Image 1 (cartoon, one colour):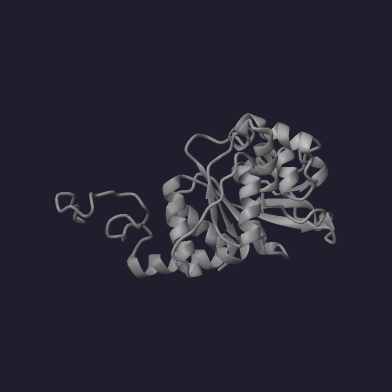
Image 2: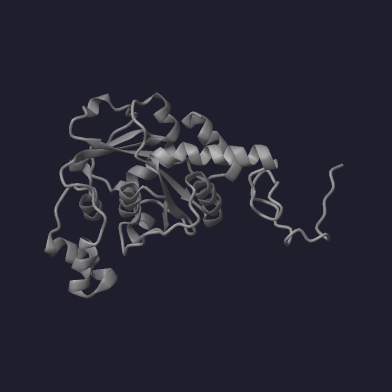
Length: 258
């Protein structure tokens, strides 16, 4: 299965409001000029602002560490070390207690310091013509869309349950790094920064799947559709998409084809 086929299957099956994005952490040894970039900016922006351009406008972007504005993202991507003054300040409005603020920074999942020089983010189908698998696939989903995707993920990965990671801020960046380090799916709420700077409407969730697990997940989605006649897990589960909610198959809600 190609990434283009996976993207089409996802959008058709779950009516996603936004295109999924592929994230690739760019190591020092890769020449960033070889990355298939469609747009660039001279301004420093947050990681959430970059991802919004990918999922809303289908831009392919390279974010060098020098261009990353958000201090929380700088920390979790390994672009800086913990600074007690900075990290106490950025957590103060959430946790208030100075010691708890510093502990929150220390507890965040972080990529190895200095290992990566930037992040490449692009629409999922871009990776059909790219030499590297995405490290992560990122979705912005409604909770019930995430429910269906995660069920396919568990089936594909032989898992019966999933644990998620929530932090007081850095939902997209920290949530992605935790998913990558632990090689498991993650779903969490928006943080204050991803809500405002990421141009996020109410009700959406962040969902990440390790890149090496992604196509297997969508293969399972395809298998379910072919076997059951649809992808819905609502009721009998044979609908083309999770639409009709008919009260656990109540016989009063019966619509026969004409």
